[in-house]
Amino acid sequence: MNNYIQRFLLEDLDIRGAVVHLDSVWQQMLQDRNYPAPVIQLLGEMSATTLLLGCNLKQLGRLTVQLRGNGPVSMLVIDCNESFHLRGMAKYASQVAAQPVPDLLGHGQLVLTLDMASMREAYQSIVPLDGDTIAEIFEHYFRQSEQLPSRLFLATSADAIFGILLQKLPTADQQDADGWTRIEALAASVQDQAMFSLTTEEILTRLFIEETIRIFDAETVSYGCHENPAKIYSMLQSLGRAEVNAILQEQGEVVVHDDICNREYRLDALTIDAIFREAGSTVH
Image 1: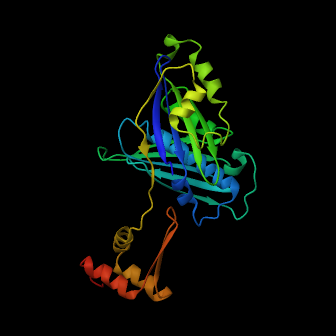
Image 2: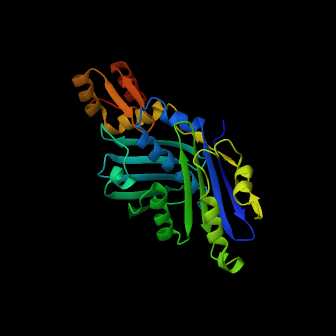
Image 3: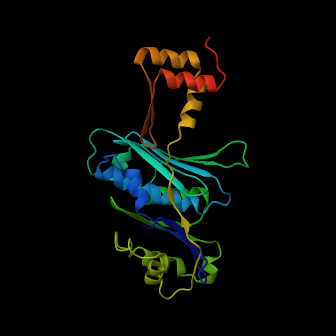
């Protein structure tokens, strides 16, 4: 199984980029979700793009990317920490038919949140959904935020996802006035699933055979959802014993669903009592 993100530099052109490939991690994200094909397509492209964004961060942190709209696919959320632990989810209407991305998402916003240990508050950027594809929406974001011409080439199936990011550095035109146009055209020749079985070196050599390519070490991507009852216990403690007891009396148990990880926690009266005794709480 190959789950990685790998940066590269076209040295003589001052064009940087990265390649992302996921298979088993992507399959874990989809497990037991039963997403319709259009949702799988959107979520896969979002996952690839979030990793490509994350690998270019100047400072390490947790990156959360959301697309929120009023269309049949109302929300897409991808969360990636500094160690490239990835998780994500989609919210959508009961019926989602194949249609153009703007119709699937409707009017809405792209929200990027970066949370770093060195920052007192998380940094957040909000831009309107502007583009006919996921790639175009994020290319628009790059133009506004980083002010670097950027291109994304993305491919998704139910088994794997693949993506290439290209960014034109400020000195690129001085190196080769036609370099960016040439590299864009070459990268656009990527066939949807032809690259899934190739290494980064093989992919870049095929695309940019005449260029000098520096390839950096690959970073492993892993699935970021692990059972974490302590997080659920802390959340219940923050609600308070009285409120949790009220839920328990009404429903006979407390059910907490972790949407992004698609996991359900069912807690009975004995477990709730143990949670609050451990926290040193008392009944009011």
